[in-house]
Length: 100
Image 1 (spheres, rainbow, N blue to C red):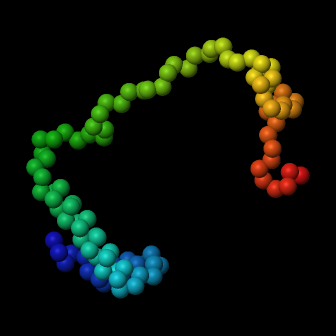
Image 2: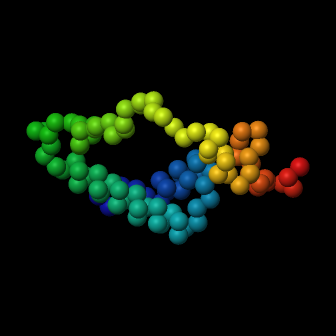
């Protein structure tokens, strides 16, 4: 598998992608891409003819609860607990700018 990706290949693709790679980066990319290709070769060597293709190894189940309307907190009671309320809403200090 070694030798499938060359320094020239990496440098060419880097130029096309407008990447400035120094020689150390090129060498590292050659090694990493070579390792990826070796891994693909290992996968290709597996006997998978009897294995049915799948998109998800585990059955998916909706884990969300039903969307049911239920009673909620009373607005006036909740706002009464707030440090400050203005026009039936929570009043909070500004976080951006000088507050103007």
